[in-house]
Picture: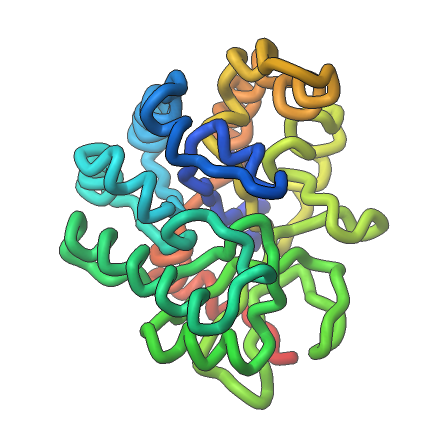
Amino acid sequence: MKEQQSTSLHILSFDLEEWFYLYSPLPGFDAEPFWHNANLRAEIWVDQILELLHQTGQSATFFTMGRFARQYPQLIKRIVASGNEVGAHSDLHEYAATQSLKRFQSDLVTNMATLQDLTGQSPISYRTPAFSIDTRLEPYRDILVSLNIRYDSSLKSGTLGEHGKVPNSPFQLHIDKRITYLPVSTWPILNGWPYAGSGFFRLMPPFLVDRQLAKPGYHMMYFHPRDFDPAMKALPNEWTNKWKYGQGTGSSFSRLRHLMQEHKCQSIADAARTGMLASHLQHG
């Protein structure tokens, strides 16, 4: 790892959901038949990620669906036992923008209860499915605070909302400091395009991603288990799915290993505990 990384904060996060949730934006999508009939593959890749974290002495935050956790209870326990953080990611991966506030809250309560039952800890970090709402808005802030969520990673840097442009740094709102926001990092000139996130990471030339991650400062990275699974190249139906979700999967895990060898990565919880999060905090 380069010496300059001591001035940087690289937070590593994973959204734990099965591969078929890539279809969740489709109208009428029902995931339950897939859970019973599809080839479940996420556990294979999460275990490999855990081994890589162990080998490099690093940690990550795993934003976990309640339905996923109930399918893989022992996996969730292994994540916590190996020193990583489990955060909340909704119960059924419904897009928050399509939910009533009551439904949003009840879904998240169920998600958090499942995770607490499995880990003995109530999650303090949250990411909404598919970055589907601006969690800076008061109704959502109030719900998250009422459930003791302290860190939210539901935003992308560079995007606009009622509270202005999202910075590429951890931040709190002047009007409400109860939650610290940790947006996913995006290209300065390509707002909303993460340079170390999911398909963007797989499709972007490695040297461009490496150059961006080497810059001092804050970097929030996010991935899904499917991002490392070459089986995504065999997705049925449209060729666009094969390209969008399969391209780069053959090399993405080795690229993740390289990333972690070059940069000291940590979970949100560890960044807060070590003071690194506070040292990069902005108020806005």
